[in-house]
Image 1 (cartoon, rainbow, N blue to C red):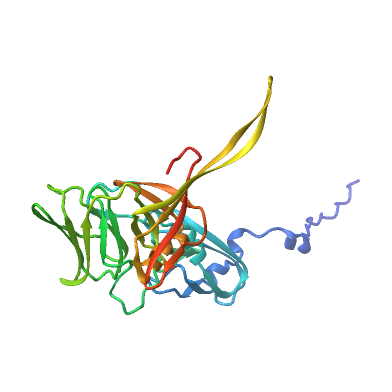
Image 2 (cartoon, rainbow, N blue to C red; image 1 turned 180 degrees about the vertical axis):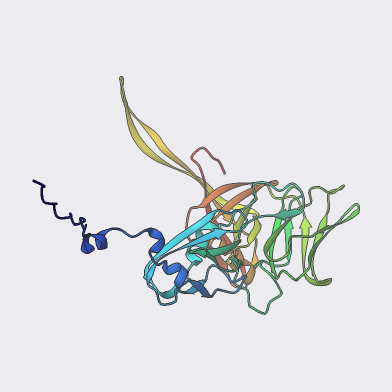
Length: 361
């Protein structure tokens, strides 16, 4: 008997869960990138050579797509990161980079000056701001506040008739736009005559140091002429004379962030402030001076009121140094005020303290 043929088997059908496929993560390449569809852009940046002591707002627009944006401030000359700021769920707005620049562009006095030269005392920084692969235009910002229409400005607050010893130096700060050609002409007079021309880098806040050192003879006087585009802009005259025995020369930074130097011809008093402490040892105890501060009160010559006020700005300086010969060393101010005595002619008193316990003034 022939067996009946079995019915054909139906092919198995696999049913995939649609909801399960929705839970499967999508490849990253399929996720929309807001930075691609809505690129960020800087809509405005501050003008170059604006002071970083004022707000420096950078405005941006993320094309209406809210997201977290990190802004990085880069020093163009060194490549170092000055600072970074992150904004959350940002669509548009602005960031102020001035506080970051004030910390980065510190004023600094040279440790030594051996000859007339261009010196770097800070007061300027060249930066760009980056975010999401977009970079702002490069800008140079400075410490001084200079009017927008100024091609050049002298940044000193003292008078243009000064004095220094044969082994000392003075510093002159100025501002110039990049298209201004600045030359510093130094003339030395005495038993002979010499003329020296310095050409600082173009643009920004600059400083030149002038000194009687480096000439073939010891000058009795000097003249520094600043020429801008082949025209005389400013002149400063120096008398070269030996200091009094108690004289002390100070260096500081004025309200423009430019260096100033002045020789105080006399010291009113010098005192040592010591703090007593008790130490114990196997044979008992004894009182010792645990801290010693050397404090010196300096007195200026009688100066016109404007010159006296310029000297008094030392109390607001971020750095003060005592100058001996061509070298400088840090000191600190023992008080936050300078005392002026007189009417039209004034004496200025300033107290300074040695920067370390082992230093002597």
